[in-house]
Length: 290
Image 1 (cartoon, helix red, strand yellow):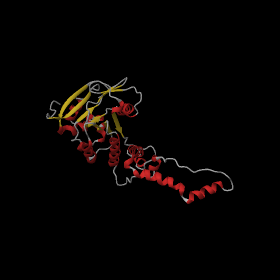
Image 2: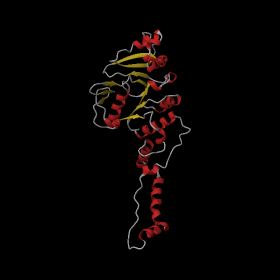
Image 3: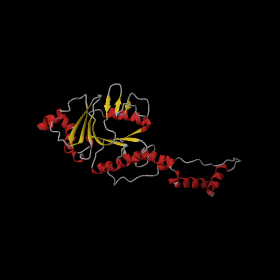
Image 4: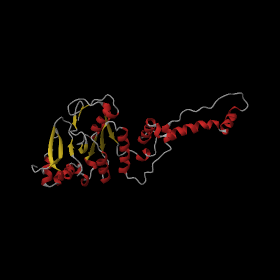
């Protein structure tokens, strides 16, 4: 996949699976391009192409990104226009047979008009007059009704809460190819979740800054992003994946003088800022050329 705009070309040289992404200071631009193209589906300066250089239809792919700074407590209280509120509303609209209680609530609300108390209420309003009127019902707003719901998150970790929100988006968009970008802290549970649910139509891009090196062994590749239309693929042994993740940590990159000779030599291999690097960890070689 290539993301092209007036000034830059980002290459994402993978189509599915679980991959580490080092954004190289282009995180905001990448997220903005993917969001405007696949989520907002509006005119944008960027165009996105597949591996054959054919434009990717906006409606065929969905981009899922939940910022880690989002106020999750409000989301899990089903506040208006939040992900859980709108997601459940959509499920109810599309599957009314699975939510028969909604019809029951509608019926019960209409029966409210036949209560003795409602006739008394009408007499209060027209007392001493000849005013004639009817009290009618209209269909209630399902999203407003859902605001009375909530999920107790006290026993849930932040990772578990994020997993739940990503699961909802993946289900709602299950008929599309999904690009999932994760920048919250990855642990064993997150890794197991990605392994369990990823399909041929699901691409996980996990920010290198969100990964502790002990959780890197299940990734397939690492992408070192650049804004240029040039790709270099490097084969490396799976045993070195944690080492590469370490090398591209911001603190390490900022202070290369504190690294040993081996690390410094490996870092120098990626000094070409005009190249996107794809490090493939499925090969058998030990990257001895570095």
